[in-house]
Length: 142
Image (cartoon, rainbow, N blue to C red; front, top):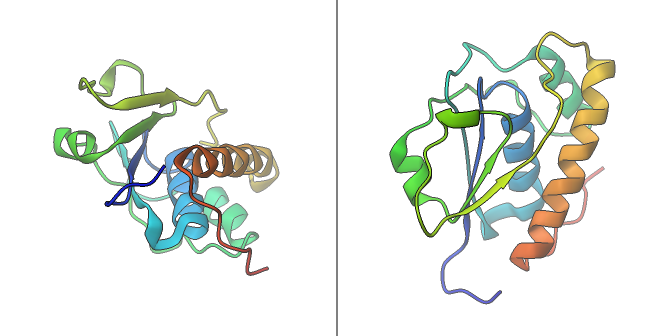
């Protein structure tokens, strides 16, 4: 996909404290400045899930300063692709947008051992998304 502007991806889940934060972090980490990345929640939590922060730190990605953000109509309108993760009818739908719904377990209330497999599946899907966008992932710094 050759485009004069970089693609914009919005990840959405209910609390913007787990799945969407991990997906956005992986896409930012692997896609760098070649893709615009946002995440939001239909009912954002106060903080990112501590088990998610710990699981991502194991991958060398720091989420400790991230804050859950509220989903806005403007964020959806600005995105080329909207990837939902269990936000149901709370996600606004606009014509001309690419929508994907990733069915993933919710890490809320789970420890880091339960979050790791969710994290691995999200990374796999983000890598496939980069491939679909024609963006090779940056080499891992690990």
